[in-house]
Image (cartoon, rainbow, N blue to C red; front, side, top):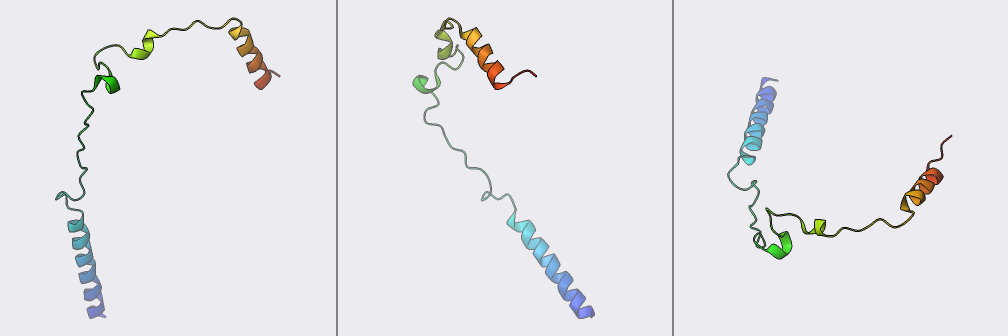
Length: 80
């Protein structure tokens, strides 16, 4: 019985040591740093410190949109 207990405790210690050393941070489980080749491209990212290009376009609301939205809201979510 003692041999069986020593055997299982030895296996447990070896398994714990193997699990600890397999997760060691020696480089195989670290994220690889990927360089962005377009980081300075103004066509893709625009001017990083400037205003976004989308804010240059402003559109007027169509006539009657508020009434239409309220009609649709009342139709979808009727008040009891």
